[in-house]
Image 1 (cartoon, rainbow, N blue to C red):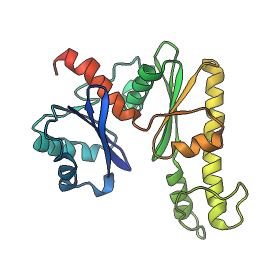
Image 2 (cartoon, one colour):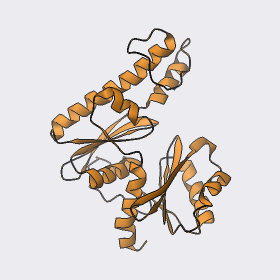
Image 3 (spheres, helix red, strand yellow):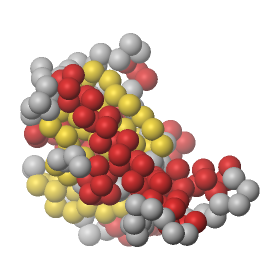
Image 4 (tube, rainbow, N blue to C red):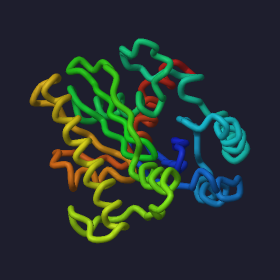
Length: 250
């Protein structure tokens, strides 16, 4: 039984796998992380045989690594430190690419075929582009919807903080709905246009794979044909463990 952990800026996502099957998935808010909360989640799964971690929050990585070793008795493998994602990386400075982005690219290419664009709509929105031969070509990064909403509140004198939800219409009739319309429709339109431009470069058979908390809003309003896989990163961690770690006897 493998425990895969994805430490993100908003949530810590955990998945328990038996073979290729995701047996259980749950989230813990990153800012609210406590050992007791993790212990409560894991107490029903005493037979964890290995742990693998992907993190974009360095200050939490070591803490959670030690906590998981305490709770499971296993020494977690850290992506980017103990193991590199086995994908051809064509970034000019390969180490600059976040491990989560490489894992998504690896998972999507193995599960859905190439060429493809993996869109992760979380705290930030990332596009990761994979060639027809399975090479990681690079991508794009821009603010997620919640960052945009927070920035409007923080950087203006009169605009309020607005909670992300479905806009009522394209043309907002009050400030709240004008903000929601701009952020939701604007982000979706941006994603749709960018994906269309990438598909023109890679070819009409390019697939769009989506993940992340707000990907459904992008799919709904962008006009893109997106295959949503909510557990893409966790599945990628499981695939890497099965295909690489055992082979290397780590």
